[in-house]
Length: 454
Image (cartoon, rainbow, N blue to C red; front, side, top):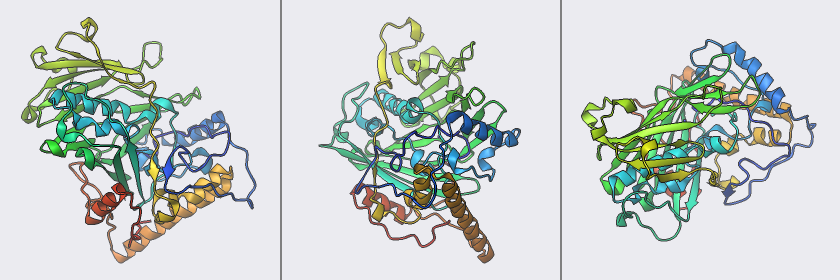
């Protein structure tokens, strides 16, 4: 949902050193871990000790409106060794993104968008929450996913205009466009399928004393997905509020109890998704129920499932967002329907590995290259060295900001036209378009940035 920065708690450190995260990802060349033999290996803190330390830090922020916007730095032993921009993306299953335009039926495309929605954050379903590095201004990350098979249409037939032969590539470019407030812009593209996605990432977070509440920031208007081969048919998917619970009992979990929306003005279809609160015994049920219906884009006033008259209902959607999601046609209550169609089964799915630029082709302000000293030290369990390297990066960022202020110069992103945007849809600059085109063609070369921001 950096941006998502101060909102997540640390995951337990791995018991064995691992290669630069995530180990399953591929690059044009291997990305080895470098050792730091001159620094002693330190004891890896266990899960409970990390949580106690994290909780003691959080207690200082009880009552603070938005801790995501507060300047504070965590010690390296509480961090997961992965850059923020690499960790946060919505393409854990890129084939569901690439398949949204495949149906010749508007309902099929809406269900395709919903299938993508439920698979985009498998990292939460399959793993524990973690705290990546905070992004620095001007830092960027880029990668590809190779998709051999796309997901079949759920309703309707395959659209001939979206068919492609052989594997297709989904490309992703993101840049930290603002530091205060922390905001990043991203752009996703799959030219073979004529589909793109874009948005700003920003979180607002506060600590209640027992859990962390995480909501979209003011610049985060959701994900905008455009189907270019269908007259720029656009879907807007908004983010719900989530909670990070279990801090006191030492067992972290993410719960969602909010309502979010998927809308398409061109097809006049809208989905309301309502995530249910925890069960009465306090155990999360991870249940979701929703409705797909016809709406008027000029009078978009229906925000609750019960507001939608049966005459407008096309179908209902329900299930566990960590297991299976089903769709039923018509206005009949979900539990009364005997014809339930599986939208997605999340249980056998895991995040798809990314294809990363070779280390020699990464620029100094590219995420993995920028944070390499910190990552290497954490992986080698040299936490003091990691904290020192992290503080040096943060201090350089402060110095660069002071220099710009003294020169009365405003920093501008390289790949996106605006640092922030009221409409929530960042546009690419010429450099951004060139970088994304090169990325999609497997050309990793980029000229160095004139101003790296940090």
